[in-house]
Length: 91
Image 1: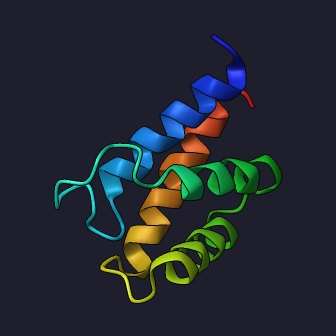
Image 2: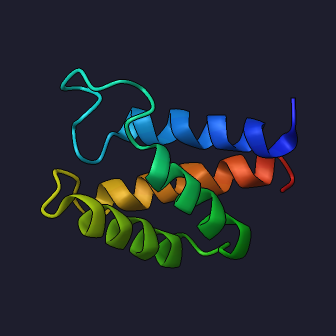
């Protein structure tokens, strides 16, 4: 399996777990955030700061979905988990 595909799938799992818009909890398919996950993977390539990544991810979800369920603390937790993944995969 290609490294990019592994990273994409792992990021998708994390995003689905946090489900900032509540779509997966509402019954949406697990690839509902496919477009956003692709952008988050790109953010992760250049970001290593949790707050900066959280700002980008929050902005992305607000741009894509308008008013969303997640609060700032949830974006910070999501971003930390994404950075932990990046570190774990040595990417």
